[in-house]
Image 1 (cartoon, rainbow, N blue to C red):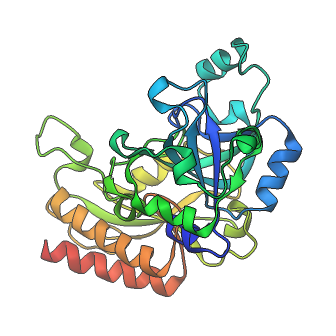
Image 2 (cartoon, rainbow, N blue to C red; image 1 turned 180 degrees about the vertical axis):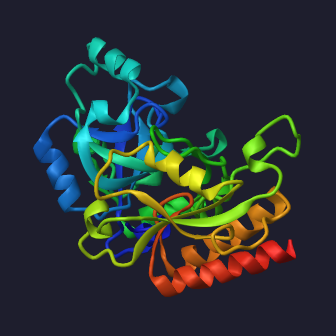
Length: 318
């Protein structure tokens, strides 16, 4: 899956624009199309990791109308709207005349960013080549790809990464796009002994790997290497079990590929060392592998080994 930076710099850019009535990826974890043929066209004309710029429609809050309000990164995983939203939200959607039966052909969202209110350009200014009043209906119904100059305009925005339905929570990185679009940094941990107890005290660093063929999982035949998730925990095996509880039994299951515990190393003293080690792994995997969002990457064995050595060094020195 292409990284946000790769999507922006691709020729042509892997970046589209469309209208939403609002921006709430924590509830609506998908980009939806009313016609299946329109979704098929979008998938054929884009690559996994495609960025979708969201502008506020005429039904959005007054301050959001005709302004660029959010940014989504989409996989090419296909499903129905109900697959990517809470059941209560789906019931509300189908109970409203405006949305009942619409936007039901879904493409899953994997990451999302809110454009900070002080930095929301009008769509006619942001997409000055692509947007015309006569194209508004087409942009809303099926989206349109942006030009290279328009796609690079994303980098001038201030963003805040936000949670996406049924994806791991994010740390809310906030700032210039070039910083906010990078893989999420390790989430904040409290230094108080009464909160976030899992993250405090002695901890082990780990690398989980997903069994099965990555090309099938990512819907990308070119995918090579291993899908990995990196982190730190008191008990890496417990983290493996926690992740596996959220996926059905089948060819894709998480396994511990590396951990300081499995190697017989002493645990790091606490989250300061754990976060340093995790950040070192993310830096290597982001540079030499393929980001899949947050702490997830597609990477070759050699890069994973390099990231692991960097983690041990960073943890020891923190």
